[in-house]
Image (cartoon, rainbow, N blue to C red; front, side):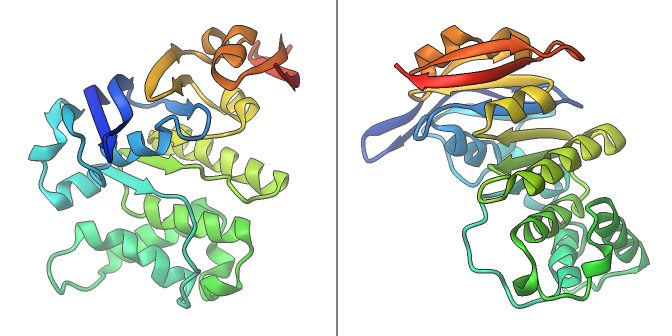
Length: 258
C-alpha cells in the first residue's frame, strides 16, 4: 500500500497541493482525475520521491519513503513520467535493460536472470519483435510500450504512470490501457495513473481519486465518483452519465460547457 498524509506542496508561494490525504490499496488499478493544474502530476512526483513535499508524509508499505534507501525503493516502486523528451538513439533492448539498474551493484553486469527479466518485459509489452530497433524509429504507441517495458523490468510492486496515453491515437490508447490491466491482473502490480480520459478511467480502474484545486474532491469506485454532479463541480461541464450494461460502470455519453 502507498498512502500520503497531509501533503502540502507549494511553488513560489502558490499552493499546488493543499493538505491532501490519499491511499492507494495494494493490488488494484487506481486512476487520478482532475482538470489541468489541479496537482495530479505533482502528487505522483511526491509519491515517487521526485519532489519533496513542504509538509506531510508518504508511506510505502507502512514506512516513510524518506527512510527508504534508493535501490530498495526503486525495486518496490517505479515511476514513468510523461514522454516529452526527444527519443534516445539506442535500441529498445538497451532501454529496457536500464530497468535492471536498481537490482545491480556498482559496475555489476547483467546476468542471466536480468536477461530473462528483460525478455519477459519485452514479451509482456509486445515489444519482443522490436528489441533490436532504435527507439527513434518507433511509433508513438511503440515508444510508450518500450518505456513501460523499462519500468516493469524493475519488477516493482507499485507502478506510477503519468498520463501514459497522452499524444496517442485511440487504438494505441486502448493498447496501453489493456497492458496496464494485464500487468495488474497477471503480475499483481499496484498501478496508480494520471488520466485525462474519464471513460478510460471508468472502464479500467478499480478505484478513482478526483482532484480539484489542489485537494481531493472524491475517492472511491468508478460508480461512486463519476457522476453529473462531479463533472459540474470539477470540470465545469454538463454531462449525461449512464451505466453500461455489462459491468455497470458509468459511461459519459455527452458533454457541453456550462
